[in-house]
Length: 313
Image 1 (cartoon, helix red, strand yellow):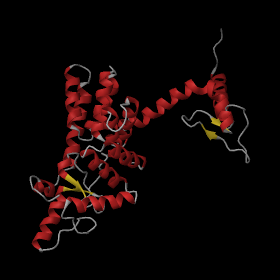
Image 2 (cartoon, one colour; image 1 turned 90 degrees about the vertical axis):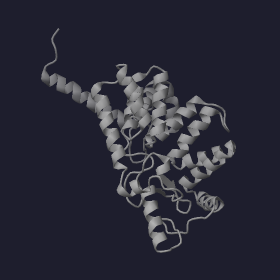
Image 3 (cartoon, helix red, strand yellow; image 1 turned 180 degrees about the horizontal axis):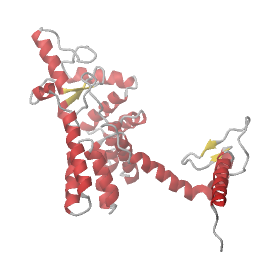
């Protein structure tokens, strides 16, 4: 049997490219081409096919469903395992250094919903004390509430104005009181507005069955959304789940991603994996270096000076 020569191979490749391009310009169900009067739209879940109408998409579903689910999972993984540029907390809006994932080293202001690092809060406190000024927010310069009740009122006003961070904060306050149904409502609203912490909090509710029925699928969804948004603990928890399901390679990917953001628990998980041969020496060493760099990036003389100070945040 004669093999294809180079010109014939090129022809086959070109024909394949042409057919793929042609398919992209035609409805996958009826075959009608995209023209001025007819605009095709991609499948809702994948990027493989396009349709001219909802009817055509519905009719083509039996033929496309299996490949669509496979491709949708591939696309989800591409997003899920992409290394975030930073954590969900981002940078301090005053010094512009990355915020520490240690919650004791920053605070959310009820007046403007900004999360300020301890270093900037402490420096602002010293300046105002020396000048005998009223204590004001380091960012928006509004008076700092003197009571928790005042702070809660500020946060509620911002939540009513659809501030996602304030809405998530109100959810946390209700959760502390055991008002799980109310916490669920606030966190759901905040998550819909893109708040990463709200997604993580919802994963906890679905795991514990607080205010909702236990639902592992929804728990996993919210963990993934939080992880995609840069939440290290959510990423660590996903690694634990993958490990429990004997999908070690995926677990390691999650822990490396979280370690690169400065997560201590993920470094410990990788250390255990390295001891048992599940993590290579090179990957473990790279994760250690990235973890160290992430921690160093959050340090400053002002933050070091603020360490151990009380009632400044």
